[in-house]
Structures are given as structure tokens and as C-alpha cells.
Amino acid sequence: MSLVRFERVAFGAPKISTSDWIPAVDVFEKTDRFVVRADIPGVNPADIDVNMEAGILTVSGDRHTEDRSDVDGVSRFERATGRFSRSFTLPESADADGIKAQSLNGILEISIPKQPKVQARRITVEAA
Image (cartoon, rainbow, N blue to C red; front, side):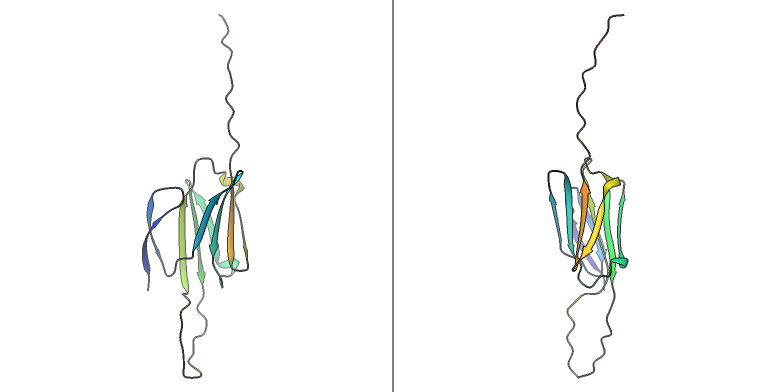
């Protein structure tokens, strides 16, 4: 089963996403960087893709299905498995070359540094 969800991305316009499940995500700004934290328990870091293209950060991956055999006669399965994908439009101040991601204890943290602010420069006009 695929979920279709109308999602408001952190820094940009609304986007339609299709996934088997959708991890909860926190997005916040610090002085020197933007941070994206996603709850992805049970997802192997090797099964996570983080891509940046044309100002869009996309986080996707796969949580594999466990063997769900009915050995004792009682079963209840609530944890979602399968593919997930989230996309975020980043502001122009994001430095795509410095993005880092790490997964620890079921939380994926993506750190997106800000580009240094361009300082205004005065140009002297010389007489010809």
C-alpha cells in the first residue's frame, strides 16, 4: 500500500510525496546551519539515500520487512515497512557542498551549513 500525502516542505512550496511510510521530521535553523532530523528506527544506514539537486534535499530509504510468521497464533503488526521519501526545498544560503548526514540510534541527522554572507564592497570610481 502506498500513501499519498500533501506535505509542506520546510523551506519551500507544498509538494506531493508517495511513500509506503513517512518518517516524522524536525527541521530547524541554527546560526551557522540548518538541521533536519528524521525518526527512522530499524533503517540500516546503508539503506538511506540523501541527495541534493537544484536546491532540493531528498531523503529516502527502505525499512525491510521482518519475518512475520504466525507461530503462536496471535499476531498484530503496526510498524510500517517499505520505502520512504521526504523532500525539502532549501534556501539559497544553504551550502550543498558541506552537507553531512549521520544515523545514530534510529535518528538521521542532516547538517546543512550556511554559506558565508557576502560582504558589500565599495568600488572607487576613478576619473578618466
